[in-house]
Length: 412
Image (cartoon, rainbow, N blue to C red; front, side, top):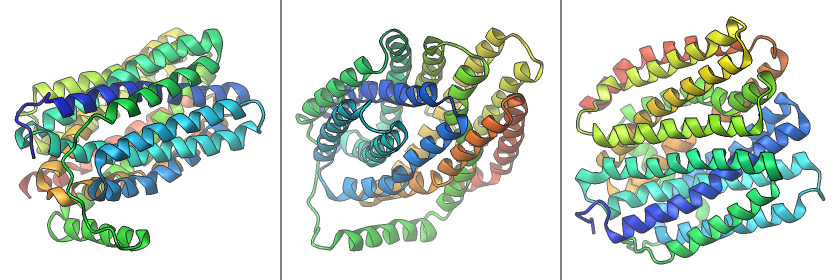
């Protein structure tokens, strides 16, 4: 049963739980890759480990959509937050006792896999908690929560990591996930039990066919959107995930605190993008979405300028941080708009599966891109500006060729 108020009791509890959980997630995702990069000093290894950690997220994003449509969404959130707290605790106990690379691959794969299962559940719960005309605003609020946690997490994580190392970060994240799970116990999300007598493999096959057949027959333009997102993830998103720590720590020789501030600026950009989406939700048009993508590409080109001209490290750092803020603001506006369009036009019983298929398929190229960029930044460590320039050109070409896709989506 939909709720007429945006911040009704259950949606408010979801938001509070997300704030706590995502803050723990943010400091953890900041600290673990940084610890690995500091310990190994290898961009290639950093890229490969990061890419490996994303692999289960691709499959489990779809599994999360299946669970979201068939299992009580509240129970999924509670179970996954408790499970994350346990995994981080076991990692804390094993750190320094097991080989660092396989330990990090295993833990990051588990954490990203859980995240891939968790997010479709949150997204699929939104249409059940708010009325149809507030879905876009609710999606923007959830996005803002992630951005706010992403803003505070790296800044606080950078200060803690620089002063005390990784131990307090692990302890804080454990407390956050446990507290979030307890908070989510009190949420009520409307749920109608479905027949789950089939084997899980048959459910996966059936639900995958349901969602893909819907996209093929009812919304074929969504297939083009997935292809576009896949290519954009390969070219641009992968570069940001792997490139930012390497550029700031490896190329510019900046401190952990400044890396935290830079990643916090990216999160602030996401927060501002969510606010702008909520404020201008009635004015945003699908037909102009390619402009947001093109502006992201242009920002990457600006990011490359100080590196190409050999400017002072601090100047390069300021430009990289500022342009990252802009990229995340634009990318957030784009992603919230796309997800809201799918949520509004997809039948409730298919929302979780369709979103999960879109997320998992569009992410397929991301691990490949991360591994490639890790090697590229290692092999061309003295020419990082050229790498960024190539990324800007390729992503700009992709955005300009996507205009017709968004026009068709708006008309469908």
